[in-house]
Amino acid sequence: MGGIASSIEIRTATPADTEALLGVEREAFGGSSEAELVVGLMSSSAYIPELSLVADNDGLIVGHVLFTRAYAGGVPAVLLAPLAVVPAYRHCGIGGELVRAGLGTALSGGFQLSLVLGHPEYYPRFGYEPAEPYGILPPYPVTPPEAWMVLEMGMGARERAAGTVQVADELMLPEMWRT
Image: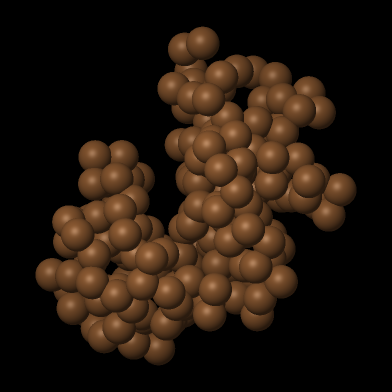
């Protein structure tokens, strides 16, 4: 499967998709931790319904991304977590399509930064770069530090965003910040 399959639609998740997208989280990560995190985030004040996106393959949900509200030095931001694609659909471009669609929606929603704790080899393709050199710090120390990344979507937002990022309470546990 080279490139994103033409039958896959990236769209906003609906309440009817919840069980299926939680199944994607469980299958993609091989356990229930991320699915439980998604349930918590979707019931938190940080939840932004239009930033929960699914990859729909003719009625079968094969991918999910969630961006939640965050603040970096008072600058409105989104935190990308988690991104999941079922193993049979990996390496087809679905994860990238989910990320790009979410970033577009976040930008049109007025968010000035996107943050992610993720693979330093994957996320730079979307424009993410290490956040700590800008003084944008995660709630807990991260190893390696380059796994904590920022994408500037509003002019000068990185420079105004110094300090420790505020994220949803569900993410305020040290174990959430291990790579």
